[in-house]
Image 1 (cartoon, rainbow, N blue to C red):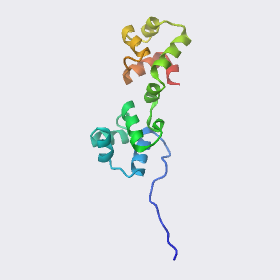
Image 2: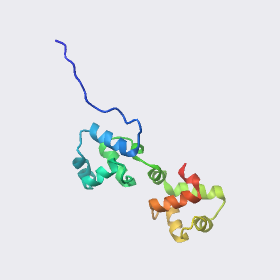
Image 3: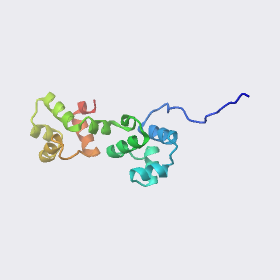
Length: 144
């Protein structure tokens, strides 16, 4: 007896955005949006917004999703999350040193309060997505 098995499953997204990869791996794992959302501690509507690219996936949430889905977390990272994961404090120091600036001058050039910037460099505080974008406007090397 010859038996054919047919698996109905989408192939890996042609445009592997964090949102597309989240949806792909959630479905591959057989989880509903509700199940994954509850495991991470968010509401299902928020997860749907991430999957539809309405909101960027926050760094810590992307890490939690990746752990549950058992995938490389870089698949769910956008530029900001990659910056945060680098770690950001090291990246900031590296870029600042390439410019040969002290913390005060580096922060002032990016129009950021020195005391806040200094805390980022020692990883006491984390920059927000908005502050990251402000830094990248002044120092595009932070993206790479």
